[in-house]
Image 1: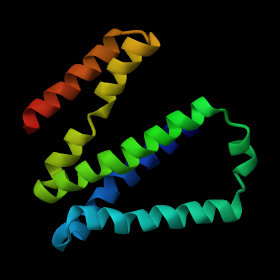
Image 2 (image 1 turned 90 degrees about the horizontal axis):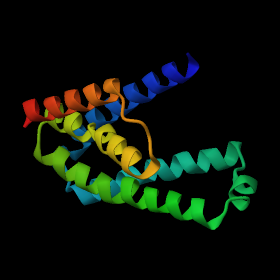
Image 3 (image 1 turned 30 degrees about the horizontal axis):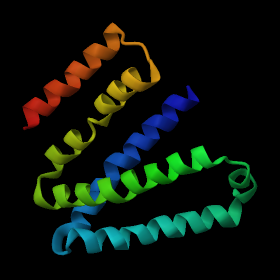
Length: 138
């Protein structure tokens, strides 16, 4: 049950933050806004370093996990975030957020194709509902 509530809290935060970003983007170019937003990430990372020293765990990591985590950071934390800001600046928050939140569809397909995860009826129904939502918002 703890994982469920943590996931729900995450969803709330991820739902609230674009509201703040849309307001922040009102008179700013998306790339400049993104760079300012990154200062929040740096502050958060500095706070983690102050209260929890992750360096021993990082030192135990192999090259492969480091490579994939850095690649994920570049793609999600930089490339996708810049594209997201451009979409958020140009469109309505009530349409952009649900569309950008369809990423489980792509995760499902990649998990099935490359990780051999099972395709079950509930998963297929969920993916069809996601597609239906995207179609309605287009």
